[in-house]
Image (cartoon, rainbow, N blue to C red; front, side, top):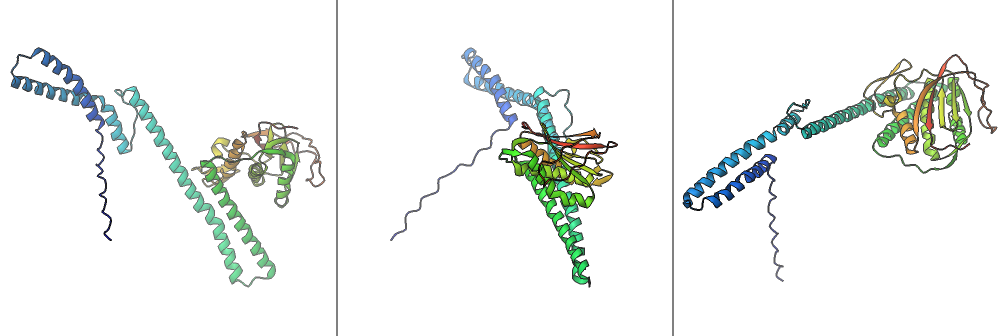
Length: 364
């Protein structure tokens, strides 16, 4: 059997590169200057010899081309200067002879370069955070594991070392999860599935889960108020837990979880934030943050606040922060017998921090 005849591949002409902007301007100016001269010459010079007519039109064409070339250079001078500055990586301020369009383009490029620089700083901060904060629990776990495997420890001490290894591992996993969530929430929307929710029951559940940590620190945790709203309970619990983690870290003695007509609030009598919430609630902040006299490396101080803010925004809400003075505050007793005990009042000699997820509609 003879092989089928081969079909020649279709000839594809190489794509022609478009003319440069200056060449296009030169061509347009040349045509605008040459065509009227051509029409006038042909209409007025019919008695000229053909050689003279061709020579004259050639001279006119050369002059029109030169005019087009120099005029296009003058028109594009500001754009060429901006292109040179961009190639050099140094975009300066507007020049006196820049037209309005070039001034706007220069401003757009300046803004773009600034955003790219900020993004690069945040990426660098993320790497710095990842290296620093993951290294600490890993080193601690390594030392504890070495002690557990090489030293002749009594059973009680071995159990204690094992508990410390578990604690460091949980801390490591929590930090990794927070970093992953912050990176995801930074780039995409938080998906929520709202449903009618008892907000007081939500806070009671969160309070019970952290009660061992509250007792370990010798703190008092109370839950007050009642309310219902259409929210994604699992996602909103996560925001409250992040805010409560901050409160557990900085509170001196008292923490309150509160439901009212505004939404959910986490209050503590700690020292408060050292900078505006908008500055701290960043996933990968490049600048170290000072909180309660302790310096935190870039990225670690704002992860929980950033996640809480993004969850609030996904519910059509917002996260707010303010400091309020403490006055004698009578709080209601919990309705369910399984809820936490509530003291009669808070001390009135200190102020407290209040983080609030302001929900659109809270029903009593």
